Length: 262
Ligand code: SF4
Image 1: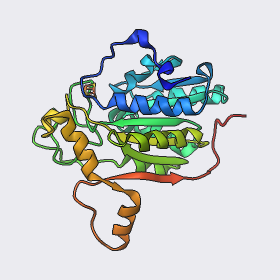
Image 2 (image 1 turned 180 degrees about the horizontal axis):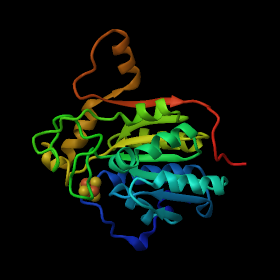
Image 3 (image 1 turned 90 degrees about the vertical axis):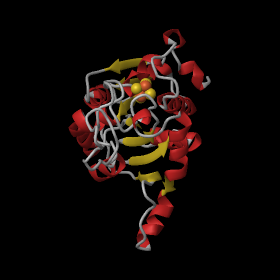
């Protein structure tokens, strides 16, 4: 099977805006799932609400498109009832870290055997561009018209501190690395969290000086700092370059997990 065979082509054309980064992440995820050799009837995709959460509708497996912020609660139920299923969750920064924040930390704490792929576009895309917990300080959104004054969540640090077995971050520029990270997450028993920074030209980019889609992808390329380099700079007491996006594999461990295949 090739990864395109996981796509539900009768649902096309998709709803995503031209140049949206979500398609890249879906592509990387299906590629990684295909590498696992999983059967479609043994795999379930789950999502909450938002642009990212429309993804399972385009995939040829059973899926649950649930309520806002509750994807992990539904996914937990699936895994506890049927541990032999492979369960993958698509979510976004608003869905996961705002209304779903409590489910996120407790799913990490329980270390449930799920793989969660978060498309972090730093804004609420589907509902018109409100600020989210990952909207950078100073960034414009409909709810922060003078620039966000709130510090952001680092989703990977949150997942690491709360107990996830696998934590990694890449961007829509880093297609090979992102695919490899998702594959490693799928192979890891327990809670795997992969954050993918994505461009949202419609609601983030146009308000924040990324006038072309490629401007934001170029930004990801030039501002990504490998975790090893970031660690070295910290050890040397040097600051990270301004607006760095630290990428890499942050956690890969073997804490006892729940919902693991029998
Ligand atoms: S609003 Fe943003 S995240 Fe949503 S589909 Fe359009 S570009 Fe993608």
